[in-house]
Figure 1 (cartoon, helix red, strand yellow):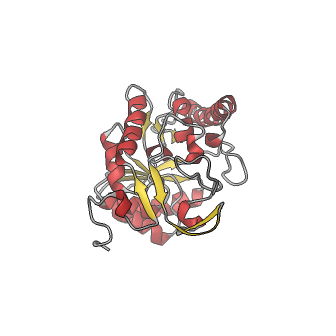
Figure 2: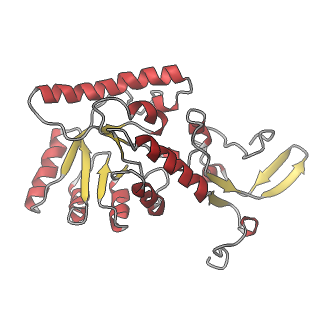
Figure 3: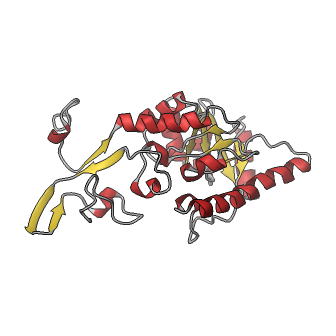
Length: 274
């Protein structure tokens, strides 16, 4: 493999399909988001799931980011192994086996988890107490997104519609904070949001952290709503068959280009439809 992917080789010499990251573009995206949060009370906790690359995440941590958001325990383990010391797992860690893996990370880093069930909280507490550890928890608040079957506000292309839904959703989250604080309980961290609504969510009083992910590499779908960030990631392919004038077959499949939002665009060739 090393012979096939020599460092410094011209892009034209790479074998295909190849995932191509323009590091200069990615750095400009990192800097743009960091500059936005430089003077804001809300801090930036970028999401690891976008690129799952610790090298990129460390670039983000150098620029304003307070820590990393992970979607699952396995991602947190990769980050901690790479020396990242402040991690939020923005989902529930359930079951003894996974909780013990979580406890193994605590001597090396601050690792917090999301919780939404008293039974899970009890299990986390019991196993942490046995190990002489303390697990930081953030209560996950359901703000109407539901994730399944409901349109996600960060992907709404109409600015007014996206801002209206975001204000309502984050209003519910911050309102929950006020409710808890009015009951005499301190709230240390309110974390949420995403790259699609960073400029609104990141300025709402009561928000402490913004979990933005896609902005580093971007994709064509998110760029429709956030054109200020550039496309840094692409897939280079080779046309392996062209038996008809208007049809070609590439050496990459649908899964290889990530088609969850529909067919990809052909970069710099708006006249070509995949």
